[in-house]
Length: 138
Image (cartoon, rainbow, N blue to C red; front, top):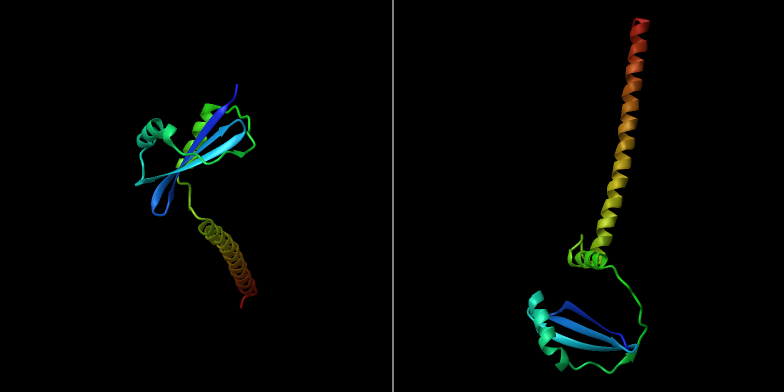
């Protein structure tokens, strides 16, 4: 018996929302691209898949590697939730800038801590000198 698997990815491609249907059957991958227009809701996508799946025109099949994966449904749900959440800053350049900012911040902390220690030591030595001068009676 042959195993058939499918996947739908929806993403924003200027200026429309696009869905890519992937179908793997007998070790071959076939793909179909669908333009939705405005951002589709989950129920609209589900309805579209139910009504129009058999009318979709898939590309010619291409040989592909098929991974046999038994996945825990809770883990899948966690991964989907992570993907849906917008975590932190989006682009790589923004992440690099943020990393640079954090490094500069730690460098500043180290420098200011050193300056504070030097000033503290200077104040201590001044106090010691004053004590010695008072003790000598000057």
